[in-house]
Length: 321
Image (cartoon, rainbow, N blue to C red; front, side, top):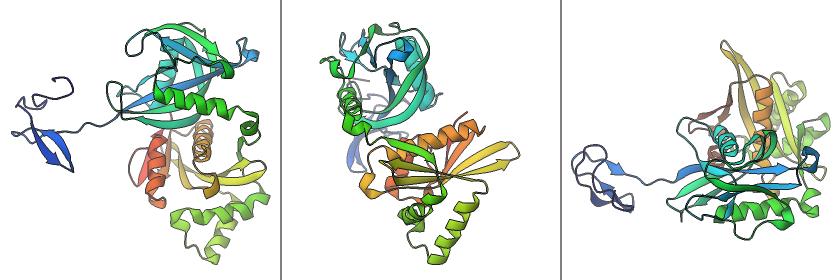
């Protein structure tokens, strides 16, 4: 490598050349035709929330960076995902290494891109978490660690994505946001009409006939091997997720059949909250793999599932144990 440019092919050692491929200028090996695609690297960040009931101040844990870039500036515990670990495992590891805290992940809080770097383009996945063990201490490449209240965050936060997610976290704790918190619960009989109203939002159900909706209503009432979670905001059901539990010879699998959120409430973390609740529900049931049928969604739904950690494919798996 010469700066950010590959001089020799990593496969055969031939000097690389530049060529127009897929509408972009890329580095190509003239001997073996290897193409160097510069894709964003995945990372994870964690918003560790503390409360006075845990013997700490109410606030969020930040580390003071001890290594470039941005030495001396504050940041959330974060880092790149290793090739042999899941997003969740990386989040737990980074927290323990940098803050000394063992944490429990509460919810997926957001997915951000940083094409500007530093160092290289990437995608960072943020989780909310709470401490469940360990002791607060600076570790790994951190020179200090501290808990900051929502109204007292440092001004010198290192990364743009960290500043943006912290601003969103502060806003989420405002009285107005607290009054509109998302409640995820099991569907009740009185939710039937609203669930059926939301069901056609799933592309595969867009043209459901009255008879098909009646059949869906019957399945909702019987709940044989089916768990339906609903998202409620200010007393109104704004989304639902249908989770099928399927016993197999090697254990138990779970499948997300349908997931729908009212268009007026999208991009507020409601879909992510439903998926996180499904993961936790499946884990409590002893499920090892949670699957999603991506063929029932549109391209934006598939992008959402990928951001939640599901692999590509018609039936995309997420390993949870």
